[in-house]
Image (cartoon, rainbow, N blue to C red; front, side, top):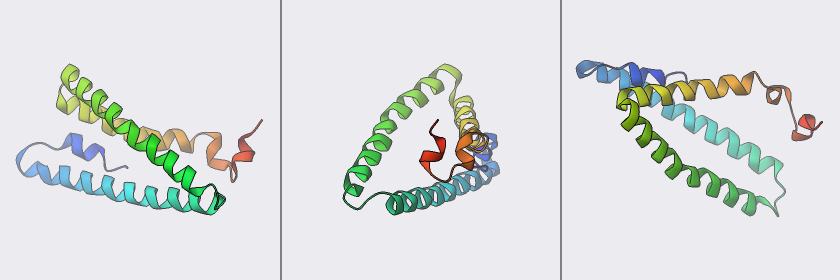
Length: 115
């Protein structure tokens, strides 16, 4: 996730290697995050509920793709493609920072967050 801003900082020409490096780092972090979240989901969800949980997660995550595409298109139309990409990269870096600074970081079980 920390390599995502390299995509917005990349100039044209040979600087596209910087874009490729940022994109590869972002892609690798998405793979790691996906493995971690699926493993956690599969180990904590009762077997009888796992199909429903997986279907719900897929519906919500894939359902967000068109919304994100519309938001990205609107931002690119309003501010320009490079600024929209920089904004998306900044939000990508900001998301884990917000999670790490929340109560969620110290919770080992969702019941720890109740109350």
